[in-house]
Image 1 (tube, rainbow, N blue to C red):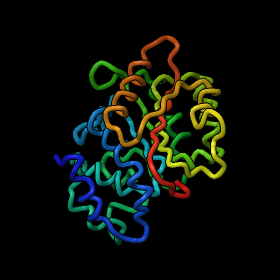
Image 2 (image 1 turned 180 degrees about the vertical axis):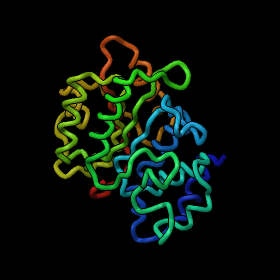
Image 3 (image 1 turned 45 degrees about the vertical axis):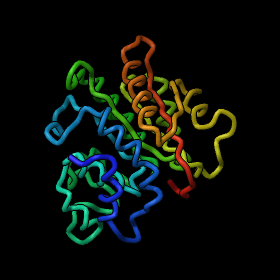
Image 4 (image 1 turned 120 degrees about the horizontal axis):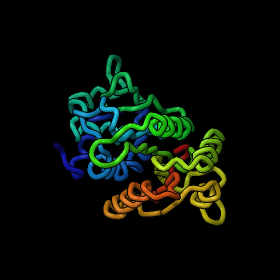
Length: 240
């Protein structure tokens, strides 16, 4: 398997106007930590009911996502060079029917979190055992500007109200929200709905991994509910 240091090289194999480079690179470290240290899913377990689910809601810049999936051998590295071309499995938005390991077809912003709430609810209703000792978890990656979409507000309120313990949202914050967040930032928006929250550097792998370990461990407590991890990164990419 490839290493983190090799991811930029994998990303350079993908070219074109729809690559959305800054949007993609803002998520690179979060994606790597999730797939390298957190998610209980592999190329051999993509169909296992007990796997963890990762949903890329911020789907319009999937180059980093594709690079990480290729590095972890979910699909051949040779697919990368065809990114966005006719007949390629790697479209400008991920397609779950074409790309192994992809859970949802995403790209239009504001859909991943509502879908994630439904998936998390469904897993609890089915009482599925997980891979190893823990029940399967759902992780949703959003952008800070994407949270401007009203569909997310309904999902945030509902998930907090029913206390979904198996749901973690990762909000990559590159300060691109249209109106900003005011006092308390993104965390306050979720906390008022009953979520537990934490903020770490989106480039610090140790801090990210520690935050995810806390969210996973907290799911076992009687008062557990949905979890938010805000990953701060540099720069500003409108619409991300």
